Image (cartoon, rainbow, N blue to C red; front, side):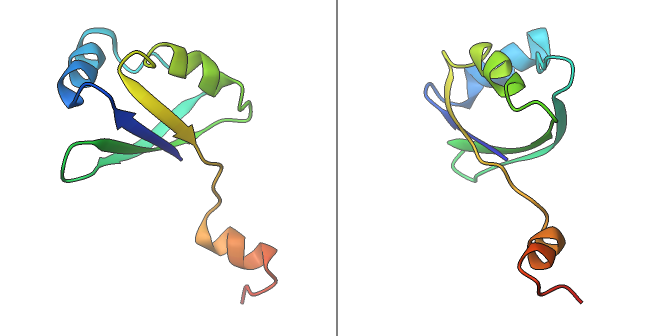
Length: 86
């Protein structure tokens, strides 16, 4: 999960995305995203086997946003890891 905090508002981010696309390196897959109601933050679910690809992608956007990459697993997988799965 990527938490993206817009440093100049959402407009420059959406403008660049419309002009250039997501600019994802091969191997980094965009799944879905949600934006908070204040339009300050975007939460993006992404998938990769190579976490280093996030650095390449972030370099295309870090002039417009700050990023936090949080490795996540599904709730079902978390329950399994905790030994609580049915």
